[in-house]
Amino acid sequence: MDISSYVLLSHEQALRRKLDVAANNMANMSTAGFKREQPIFREFVEKADQAMVPDAKQTSFVLDFGQVHDTAIGSFQATSNPLDVMIDGPGYLAVEAPNGETAYTRAGYVKLLEGGDLATAGGQRILGEGGKPINIPTEEQASLNVAVDGTVTGRNGPLGRLAVTVFDDERGVDARGDGLFDAQNGRELGAAETRLRAGGIESSNVQPIVETTSMVEILRAYQTSVQMNQNLADMRKNAIDRLGRFT
Image (cartoon, rainbow, N blue to C red; front, side, top):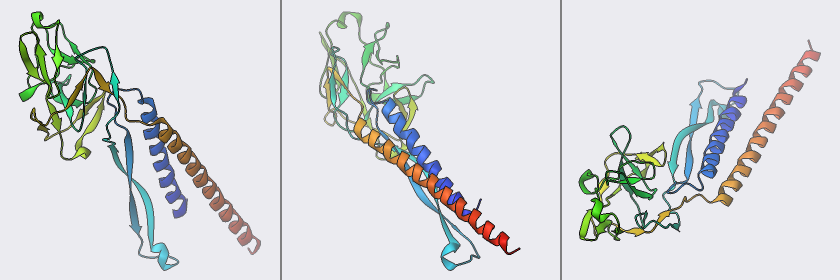
């Protein structure tokens, strides 16, 4: 293949990456707290010492630079559980990951484990202030409420507070699956900075129409790239045929 084919190939690989991300967004449109992801591409310029014409000394390729998630807040979806919460603003709930490390989530489904600890729907213990689990005594479990600042209150008063952690650079927050994120160097918000809505969860911020439109645009761009590649192949074939007549 000549250099033009490699350029088109890099473009088609980028389009495949965009399609994979859009398809994953569509698949998670009903996932609580899911944040729409968006790929990032950069221009990679390769410089040659010699070329047939000066403009051909530089060749631009498409470089897959990674992806980021859209931090826009999803809509509030009411549930029948007074412990379920939605973070009304930036930040994440801290949870104890299966490997013992701290992970983060915006999926606000909250339940009680057999031992009385608050946990996510997946069974990961939710960490309160100072990174400590919140344990609810048996006699308090019948009447629990979550205040705007995250304070969990029982019949006899406060039992702990759901902590919200924010990160200055969202690019360092990486999805790890099961609605959990990995991140470092977070800052735990104080009670005055925390805003939670109890009795519901945050729905996905994926917009089906936007993702469907994006997938159609990706398909059309891929078809155009394939057609350009075919046109270049036809040009090379015609050039070889013409040169063959003079040999």
